[in-house]
Image (cartoon, rainbow, N blue to C red):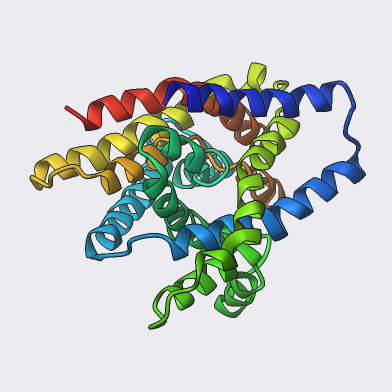
Amino acid sequence: MLVAIYSIFVFIFLGYFARRMRMLGNRQGNILLGFLLNFALPSAIFKGVYHSSINLELVLTLLGALCCSLGCGALMYVLARKFFGCIQPVALTLAFLVTLHNTLFLGVPMVYGAVGLEASHKAILFDQLCTGLPLAILTPILMSLNGKGKFNIRAVLIRLFANPLFLSMLSGLALKFLPIEIPEDVFAPINALAACATPVALFAIGVQLNFKEVRTEWKNALLVLVFSMLITPALYLASLHILHIPISSDHQMALIELSMPPLISSAAVIARAGLNQKIAIASIVLGIALSALNVPLWKYLSCL
């Protein structure tokens, strides 16, 4: 696990170093993101979903984790408004950041290092159902709450079915449940593209890192991280113990995914909604740094 965490942060540092040294311009950065979002990540998602062992336990695990994320996001909003005295835009920003975790770019390689390959395949399914789907639904809701538009379920569906990541998940599920097995040789180019996904995604995280906002918004950022990286996974782990459910590798996968820092793309959504983007950036940057300590903690606690 420590080797995996070390490798993750080396890739992130290389991206940050490349941006600081101006090795990448906007044109190269757009090409990198285009390759990542349209080819590498869809290949990784398709491969992961197709090779996952999907059963009732996994479905219940995903539903339980999703409930914990949504519940902690709602709790964050209520406390921000009633207890911390935050204005509406700040409360919405905090709640949105707490609800959505970095379950793909950072979560999948963390799960791979902590739990193994099979769990990382399921983590991809976790990302699509517990992060991708809520993101697609919550984004227009957030916009409408701040007067930036109206919620429209048709627009949500159009956006979902135009998303290469969501379509790759559906394709993987459709082929998985066919009564035929696809020969592994067919996956050779898909595997090659999927192998690029993690290093390129982590490199992209490093390119986007910005430490300016941490100095001004570190208090709000720490509040977000306490809820997203500590309270949310603690709620999930406590619910397993209360219900006397033996902790399996699926539960460890979900626990690590729930302990991830806020989703990187949430900063762009928050900016479009006219909310506090500085809190988002500070939370993401601090959260990425703290994840190196957080993942071993929850892996240890899950084994007690």
